[in-house]
Length: 178
View 1: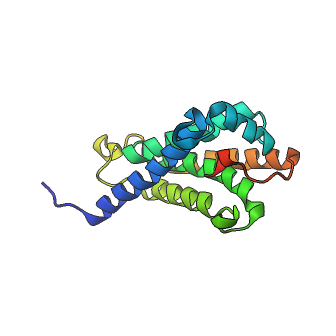
View 2: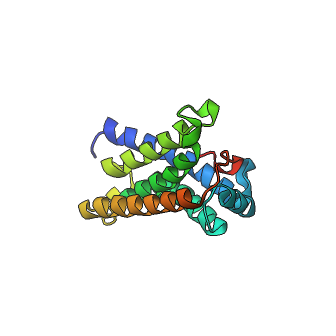
């Protein structure tokens, strides 16, 4: 049996912490858990923020966060998980950017940090303590990194551009705090 590797243990801790926060935010949107607005409330907020159609946007944001977070925790399809979460956070950053950088002023600091962290894990890989490792990296191939991040970047850019084309200058809503 091999000894515990600090790098792999650190990746597990980073995946677990980041994934748990993403799951909490995604389930706020999808189910109203943890004081969230739920799907209907989030859909209305998304419409108000310029993401149309609101319901589909709420589902996509919630699944990107909760689904990406769950996959990160498991270390399963890690490039796709990191890319999905980072793409969802790009949408949140676009909402918070007009308020500046710092979170206490409603800025984009927090969603940017979550997005960069998820992306970094997706790029670094899950480490030894993961389902990807246990399955011989079947869902964590070199080509999946490029494909997942390219698809996420294109999708996020399209969503943000569509929002910018038809949005009102509304302040960030409680339904999109990350």
